[in-house]
Length: 221
Image (tube, rainbow, N blue to C red; front, side):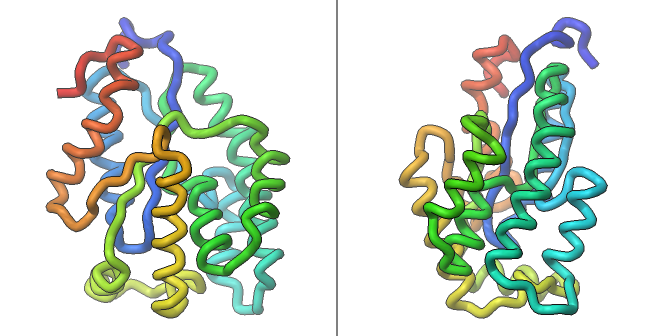
């Protein structure tokens, strides 16, 4: 790690988007890019990020038994509480940048939009678990639902209980994500995920350049 930047304040960046939007690829590229600039990076995911969180992830995504929507929502925030307390905040305090594959915006999209749960109920849990803690920047990779489904089909991987939801569910998820962008535009940057991988990466770099500049890491070129 570059000694010059060792004591810089950490930043929390989240990548959001529906299944097939390319989050895993882009978070890896962003991590590599930040590392080349002397930034200590920790990559994590939700649900997950801790041993308890990963165990809850397995239940949420692969339970053979039906899960009530409210139970799913509570499990998401249980995993998130452990994640924020034991991983995200401590690493930020130590000067690391934390990149998370999904965070609370995903809950507003999947449980709020997809499951049609009340936004006010999600907000209550958000305030309970996070208080005023929010990402410094969120990158929303936006992709038409049909294209996301084609990408998942092309991969040939087994789908989980959320990925297997119908087209209408996935459309509501996308619409909820776009609504989050409208509501939180100063924090959430919408990036066209239909573009080639390198163009999406360049767009993401452009969206975080202000964070880099504010901490003296240069213009991100």
